[in-house]
Image (cartoon, rainbow, N blue to C red):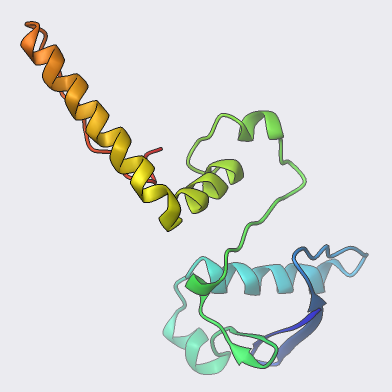
Amino acid sequence: MKKLVIKKGIYKYQLQIDKIKYCLGFNFVEKYQFKSMLFEYFYNSKLSEYSKENIGEVCLEINENKIKNRDVSFYYVDHNYSIDIDLKLNNKSLISAYLEMLLLDEQYIDTINSINILFEAFASELDDNLITSKFITYTPKQF
């Protein structure tokens, strides 16, 4: 278990977390404040000068080590989540984000380069047969 500390101004929350954390209960105001602080931190919300000076910015620590928002993958699943819609792999899909993260691994670079070479060979063969074609070079994000 890891200790998560998130603080902003007079608000400070300490939680024991592992891979997943569920926040349940009737303390809606505190949960909303906690959620707002997480969103502000991970989604780079723009703060006004007044807010920065008087309230402060959100600080997030795991095991007393400050972390940056790009070092952690943060996914929010709300009560309206539908796996049927998520399987369509749109830009906000959790499955799409997970697959993109997997394809960025170095072990798949050779496979992606091989696919690009095959597409180029296929395009040149089509060009020889009087059909004009144009294939783009794919990146892991485009897969």
